[in-house]
Amino acid sequence: MAERICKNCGAPIDAGATECRYCRTPVGSTPDMVNNSYSQGNAFNGAKSDEEEHKIHAILAYLGILVLVPILAAKDSPFARFHANQGLILLIVNIASTVIFSMLPSMFSIARTGISIGTFVLMIMGIINAANLRTQKLPVIGDITILK
Image 1 (cartoon, rainbow, N blue to C red):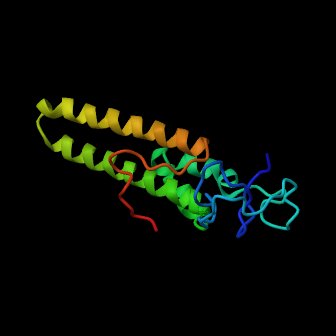
Image 2: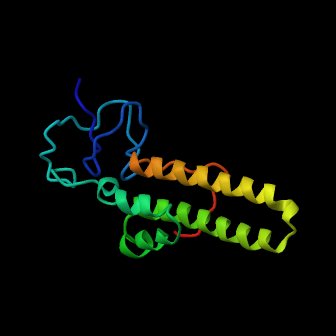
């Protein structure tokens, strides 16, 4: 079976996709371009995709203060920027909960532990998404946008 290729950027289109995952150009139900050699002179002609190029930046975004690495070093990458936003929100939630719960009596330690475990689980989910080159929003915090 022939592979579907985006007319706009030349990226391979995933089976069943309604838009290109790289440039978000809508695609029809028929193959937009059929070319398995990628010889159209596009960005996918031997070059790494944005996701592959900035995979490490995206992973670092979930490791506390290292969120600054993708913010500063990969500011033009939509993939790294997405994960930097998610990582920054996690860092803010972690710092805020630490400050708030440090002022409360020790009877709130169970709530603090719960939030810490929750942010740790979200961090692992984010790292897995970044490592698998996905831009999937994290539960609870995924709709919050700080970095545009």
